Image (cartoon, rainbow, N blue to C red; front, side, top):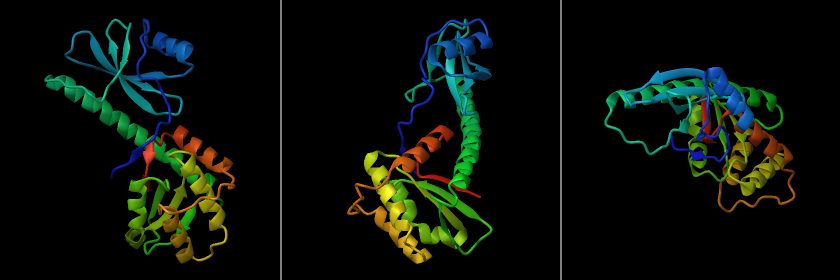
Length: 238
C-alpha cells in the first residue's frame, strides 16, 4: 500500500555531541534539543569506529542512528546508503526492522485511543457483513492513495465493519474539506447517504465551505502526528 508521507516534525536525525555514557548522551540531547530520549539498544558493525544505536523518544517511538565508538558523534541514517559489507547491512536492516515493529505497535495503540476519544463526534462508523472484525482508516480528502482505499470500501465492508477518521493532513485545503465533510455529515442519517458523502469529498470538484470551523480538525491532526502517524492512509485491521 502506497502512502503520502507528511512533514510532521520529530527527532532531528543529525547532531554532533560529546558524551561519555548513555546517560550523558541523553542529557546532552535534552540540553541541546529539549527532547527526552533514551538509548535502548546498540548494535556493533564491521565499520571501524561506528555502531548503530536506537533512541526512544517521549512518545515511545524509536529511531536508529549511527554513533561513533568514542561517543563524540551521532549521525542520522540517510535513505541513500550503499555498502558491500553484509554484516553492516544486516545489522542496519535488523535495527530498522526492530524499530519499525516497535513503532507500529506503539502508534497503533495511540491511534486506537484517538478513535475512542472521538468515537461519538468524528469517527464515521460503517457496518459490514462481518461484525467480528473492524478496519480503522485515517484518510485525507486530497490523498490519491486514500481515495483508492475509499473506492474499495464496498469490498472492505464485505469482510469487516469500518471506522474512518477523515483528517486534514496535507494542508489547509484538506483541513477545510474535512471540516466541511463533518458539517455535512451531521444531516446524513443512513449509511448509504454517509458513504455517498464520503465519496463526494474525494472528488476533485468538491468545494469546501470556507467558513467551516477547522479548529477541531487541526487538533485531531496534531494528535495523530504526536501518536506517530507519518503518512496517510493509515490503516489498522482488528
